[in-house]
Length: 164
Ligand SMILES: [Zn+2]
Image (cartoon, rainbow, N blue to C red; front, side, top):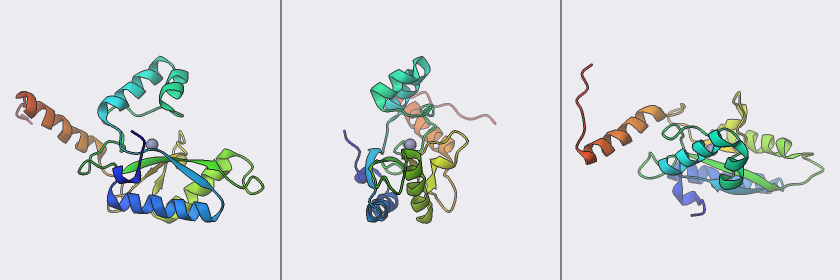
């Protein structure tokens, strides 16, 4: 399944389209490489990376250490939609941007101008990653994950009461 803006929350889909338009106006062509990602796929990516970063790159296009399953905002936590996407520049004016990092930084600036979080600022930069902020903050992915796991437990009939 190839990634489409329709797999993103409506607000993030609009921002992706705006980012694509702003980048395009500077001659930068963007490709959407990842949107909503299931728990199983995330676990396979993470396991592949643990075995070998090269395998993870070849099989899944993983360019930096993936989050464990349940810990990524690519999961479809919002009515089946994701609050994060990955987008990579595929062509750009080389006289303006000498290398891929330079053009990724420009795209990051444009995204931040739209109020998106850009993964290029992290200690371990993930320059292709962009997220929607909820009320000015990153949403609590661990709570969202627990709700999903509770649903599975209820399906299996093994929900337990919290004692704390
Ligand atoms: Zn990402």
